[in-house]
Length: 291
Image (cartoon, rainbow, N blue to C red; front, top):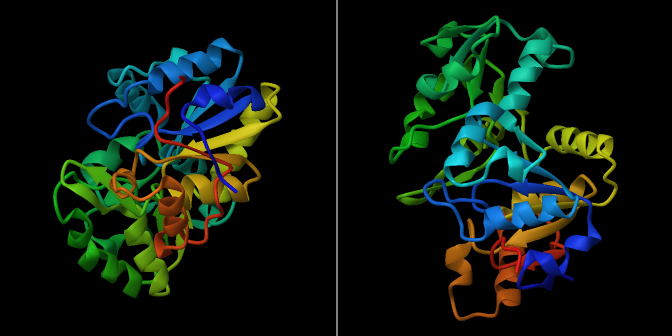
């Protein structure tokens, strides 16, 4: 059963390794959440190891620059791991399936954002899925209807049997317009229609394995995954063997703004289809703050 607490400091001594989501926990994409950076600083001051984990389709370096603008600098964490960085390394190494058999011509869902992510790789970005060996979805333009606008191109890719690499499995994203479909929703649509999808990021196992290996090298043995997505942060963390902590003030802030008890709201959300069978989190907090 989930235990609700008011602040992170109440449970911090139980764990020595923390995997903390970025969007919806540290910031909303526009502004930082009050107290979040301080919570990371307090963890590190007490010798805890902290990994910021994001389903961002961009590599770690540009994410670090963005986090710095929100007041979260490399002094606040030990590592920043993104699904975009994982994608880059898998496409560079090509030492495991299906990356070892992929062709070199790629169609990008958002060339302006994702093209720079692939710099340094032996790939050719093509303008038409009919010319591609595979499809890559990592980012979407920050405009209304961005996901729906890609349906025709992805339908063509599906007809050609192209594999789709999804470097941002989030099905929803927070924007100034509210909650909108994200790259993961498009990838799931591809999979539901019989297409091959290679998932990089939460809630899938590989990215949690990478985090566990890093924490283990630093001597951590007791891990806590913190996030605002029941499907990705809670479900993915739990399946990877982590204890989990749900942040109510992120993706589901509107749900918890009602007069219903927080426990009842969480139970309802866990029973809803978007949770995709995620178990109840070990802990829950209104927001990420130390005290």
